Image 1 (cartoon, rainbow, N blue to C red):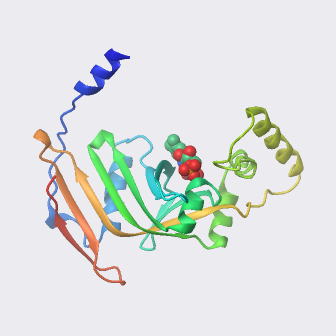
Image 2 (cartoon, rainbow, N blue to C red; image 1 turned 90 degrees about the vertical axis):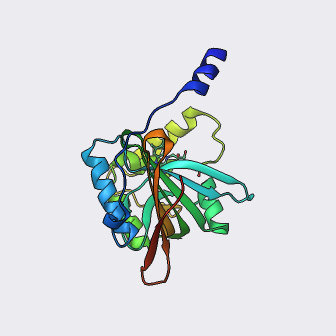
Image 3 (cartoon, rainbow, N blue to C red; image 1 turned 90 degrees about the horizontal axis):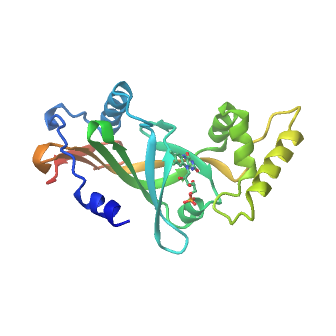
Length: 218
Ligand SMILES: Cc1cc2nc3c(=O)[nH]c(=O)nc-3n(C[C@H](O)[C@H](O)[C@H](O)COP(=O)(O)O)c2cc1C
């Protein structure tokens, strides 16, 4: 273990990203996010829509996990999950959350925070219908974040659900659906050489999608 710990302490990459020019950054962070997501996709970043989601859980402790971003717009940044999971129960009590994207291949990070809202049921229904049948079965079978007595139990539940809905579509479970995070701030980080990184932060100034932007010390 000691050699791995030593390796961990000396791992060091130079981040040689190109500089950011605030004058060329979009008026609002949603447009700017669209540009960066496009660049991440074109640059073959692995799973660019995988995002760390931090929430406060029901006991008041911070907790984080990765989810997949499924949509973004001026309304917010959308992901799908189980409403009774640890994150779901946490969000019920405290709707504040943050998301962090790390696009390693481009030395980029995007961070945003704000309130999280449930998607309208029809939108969750439409997305659920679009998922592969196996994923639908998994969403029905999983009491996400509850203690599971054995792997066999989960697999048995999946088989039972598969058989139950052999001849008809699987309905979306009520405890599964989408959320969107409506950001109050969005920060774009670009790694630069000698740790003199660039950071540009947008802060919401009004309800009507008006934003101010500024640089931050790295
Ligand atoms: C790459 C990746 C993508 C994931 N996508 C999702 C997702 O979209 N929705 C989800 O509920 N869990 C997703 N998970 C699993 C979550 O990280 C987490 O284990 C689960 O949601 C339970 O979290 P909770 O107990 O904090 O509620 C993903 C995990 C990884 C590693």
